[in-house]
Length: 62
Length: 244
Image 1 (cartoon, each protein chain N blue to C red):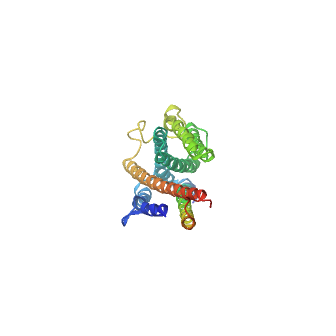
Image 2 (cartoon, one colour; image 1 turned 180 degrees about the horizontal axis):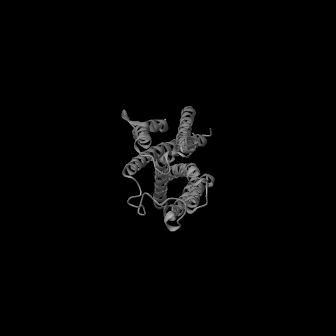
Image 3 (cartoon, chains in turn yellow, brown; image 1 turned 90 degrees about the vertical axis):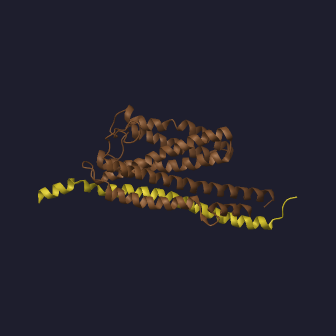
């Protein structure tokens, strides 16, 4: 039994949390960046639509 | 109104999906297949065990960061020669995404180092030169942000983008010039022919192609954001001129 416990703690699969962490960090950073870019894009498009309405109501300069 | 119409046109062309949408679809499908290859097809390393599978993300991410900084280098040269906004937009998008990728290369490396080297970080040549690379391109983005005008920021950033690229070959050759704890290259001119098992090499290649598509998609997204920023800037300028 003792041998089994010692062997299992030295099996490569004991490093699985690091594998999980590396992939999780990769996904969080990549999708976090894409989310940030998309959110900024959405906010700016809303701002453009709002300012465009103001622009349409403003008389053009001479 | 012309600004919003031109942005809508950039999203799709005559009912066909835009290049960005096609890239997103290809990247999504390839990423799923890549995960299948990494976890189901690639053999488990006999020494390092399952944690070695970090390699299929870590190495392609690092290579894509080098490619991103090479694009910055070329686009910065283009901007200094032609002074057109298109070159600056490419350099800016590529630098920002390059920083994201090199950050990930450092983070995945740190996580991989802990079980393999028994330390999170060591100041060995590859890690140190990569950290310097990260600092150079963070400085690139800061120079751009803090410059007094947009055009001056583009010029200063282009100079940093050209000079900073010198560190990329130094990072690659660091494991050859100064042998240390980091493994030798598995890709490029100094890679040994039998450095990788055949299946491992194929999975690595597929992963690299997947991340190249991911990079192209991210550049397309970032450049669209830049177009929107410029459209917003033009509307604000027109409104200021009209006294609003």
